[in-house]
Image 1 (cartoon, one colour):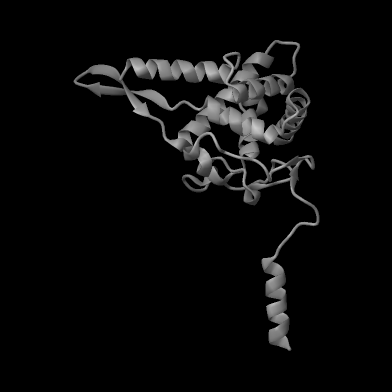
Image 2 (tube, rainbow, N blue to C red; image 1 turned 135 degrees about the vertical axis):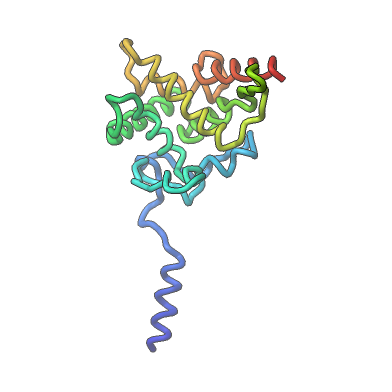
Length: 210
């Protein structure tokens, strides 16, 4: 009887389900999110059901080991990137609120799933080629190099949040509105986006230094 009970509990544990579907802020589903445009970024943009969460605030230790941050849910990485510049450090609840409002605005303007818009924006805003400094014999010159998928995602998230921060500074628009605009423009590949402009600039400089 004990064996039977053990097997029953183990089978119940293996089919672990939530009481209701995991949706971001109880609204946006993770089911139909695709990283289709760029296959190399698939492993570095965590949006599969394993990374699904209700709130982008997991207190996970993603800095403990190298490359572990690739497993951090992509919306949480955006949230973490928002709390930059001394006065905002550590204010994660505020960052979560900003992301929530921005996603509401993205949905109102595009009528699409904001998580998908964010993924598309990151794919479009990630530079594929960059230039590095190579010094030999006191002469420093730039050499064009390919960018690894991990750095592409890191750079895209940084550029999107930096663009939103710059647009909201000394402006009537709130940071949430600016972030929403930045995500929408990046997803469209529009040159109105700060991130897309920076990406094009980086790639142009790299092309000149081949």
